[in-house]
Length: 198
Image (cartoon, rainbow, N blue to C red; front, side, top):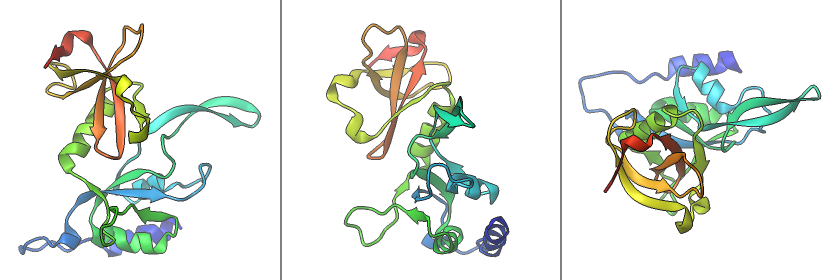
């Protein structure tokens, strides 16, 4: 499988030319799903990473039993959610060949794959990687009671970010919600001295 994927990836690299890049060749962050079981040896995010395709999968630590012992293991927050940065010319043949890898499609939208703007994705990845323990939420899990004050971050790794704080009763830790609209929200820790009310 690895060799097939590697050769397939090499054979479908987009040709560079001076003409305008077609929609098919445009690099985008595609929202995709991996239908493999959670304990598969080669989940899609690892397979695509091995093919030198840029992939982001929100990861969390969970206790898993291995050989009778409970061990912490980093696993995807949502097994079937990954973000892949490449073109349709590269990804379409891989999706066609790997039955468990699929695009997520826009609702009611003529089979158009979902994408995330580069700026939004870069911002989200930077925020998640700037903290040791991000908490992830699907849109349905965020309630009005969780939303705190609107703030701007001044200084530190999240300088310039604006968003809502997470309401946490009795906690000294401050967390900022960073959102991929309609898909996923991360609550990331911020230092109180960097918080400015808007």
